[in-house]
Length: 478
Ligand SMILES: Cc1cc2nc3c(=O)[nH]c(=O)nc-3n(C[C@H](O)[C@H](O)[C@H](O)COP(=O)(O)OP(=O)(O)OC[C@H]3O[C@@H](n4cnc5c(N)ncnc54)[C@H](O)[C@@H]3O)c2cc1C
Figure 1: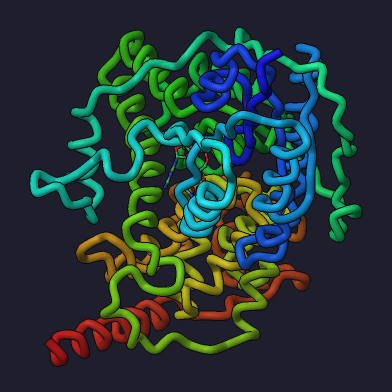
Figure 2: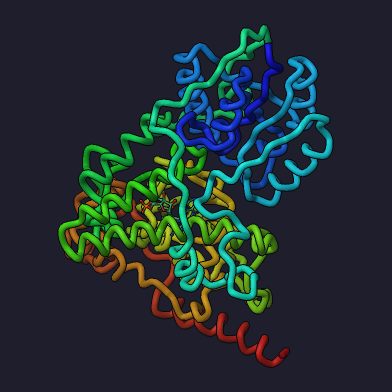
């Protein structure tokens, strides 16, 4: 019998349209599917317990899927370098197959493993439609600004998904290996009880097709409406695919080509613009992955170094009020409570909460970035860092420092009937609509809800002055 090959699952937890897994299966040799809990990640600065809970559920779904084919997911804990070397020795594996993870830690780890293993390691670009290095300026350097990146990205040829959903077959070997049970949160040393969405690649497919059938053609306006379906917080004008993208339960190729089909079927200019916008968001995802790849310093500080001198406020009480959803600004507080209830928020809520921290409270975006990573089930270093730096104005945009969201007008515009606020802030349920966005303007505001911790008009001027001073400083220095 042919020597088996190992498929190392990381952020590609699906059988459908998985390029490395497909290549491993095509060798005809038995495939050993393995997932490794890496202590360096579990102890790392980007770790979050709700996301681990979501990962465990996702692995259980992947294992169930593999079992239907007579295979099983091998679970191991420890340094991937050691685990893979042992596994290769135990099984006589001929090669390792994996899909590239573009974060700085993962790239270093994979290079190290390639050097250390004495069998070939085949690496595939699967998690993005165009990997870093494939979208370049005419002078062959990477883009640092979104719009030209997007224009170039759109011109590039895109590959089709391999196979149809559900038709991937993994040759299983009659290998007698010890199969460890999938660990629980407690077994990995964490606790908590998190309600996570339905896991598995079939669930991801259902999400996608539900979105395509009902909402993609209204995405342009629907994506910003904060209130979701009262019976299901995951359903709004957005696709809710980010938790599924996070661990690769669905491929970006499939989502892109499905959106192209929705474009063909769009009956109105507005519907077409909505699909274009949706594809634009998929491109943001690729853009931030490229940015982090080419500018890893962004993980440790401002993408634009001129803001390194910015005088952030060091106010632990304000930071705490923000994390607890007790700033006195209902839309900000609703967002922060949703985050800690669901491990997820719609994009508009993320922008409002992030703008409040960085502009109204003038607290360093890195504190918010860390907090989001602790809670988001879709928390991704590249996306989260990109979103925070965009909102703070320290990122790739040219002139973003004047972008200061007014939390009251944002609330009026994107939660016009106050349904989002009432959903997440039970103490404001009885507040009449004219006051729901600014309850401190009532004659007798609810006693169990705090007054605003910052005056927006004052805080806006303070933020503009601080950002202006940092820019001035830079101008003086250059
Ligand atoms: C401060 C801040 C932090 C963020 N942190 C993360 C994070 O850790 N992980 C993460 O996946 N996204 C992050 N985002 C981006 C965005 O908010 C989420 O991707 C989006 O809300 C996910 O919901 P959805 O899948 O329904 O998105 P949809 O609106 O349905 O969009 C489809 C897909 O496009 C991509 N996308 C959408 N909006 C953005 C965006 N603004 N930037 C990059 N990609 C986007 C996502 O992959 C998303 O799943 C952050 C945004 C901000 C402002």
